[in-house]
Length: 77
Picture (spheres, one colour):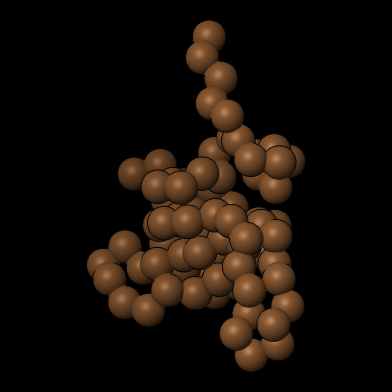
């Protein structure tokens, strides 16, 4: 069995929540792709979020950022 190294901020995330995964944003009830998970600094508040989940629409469009607990695994197609 091969184990993938995950940064400390990612170690508590479920295995399905990874870059490239298709997820559902629970608040928007909208499916998206995860292009990046990692540390992010809000440019307005200068607050650092150690484990932000970036989402982008499958068909293109504007990305948005959520907390790891705000997404669920998308249903299989």
